[in-house]
Length: 157
Image (cartoon, rainbow, N blue to C red):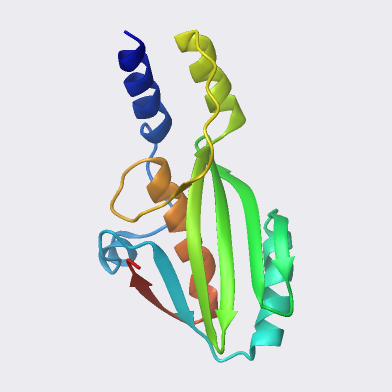
């Protein structure tokens, strides 16, 4: 019975939502299994870092970790449909790399805990393109954010 509760909880936490920020044409360019977004930019790393920092704050992200010298940022934000996103960004030369993670919002976790009668606290998990539900929501928001900085490529490792 406990295993069934865990399985049902995982299904509830990962599904029941769809990504809505990318067009069909945009989603068709992303290979299944992609874990990283690489954006080739024309901006020098120092300038791009400052722009990213400001842009993340403008859209309501909380910067949870940063290193300006290493051109590294981690930002978190509530996205939509009970999904939180966390984005790790690193600039190497003129390439911005973004790794996306997802987590059910605290409201969703509380609802599942109450409904199942068990405590449930889910940490962040890597968003992989091709997975449906919350992982797709988080990854699509990362893609949408990266689009304004240059040409995108995707990779699995």
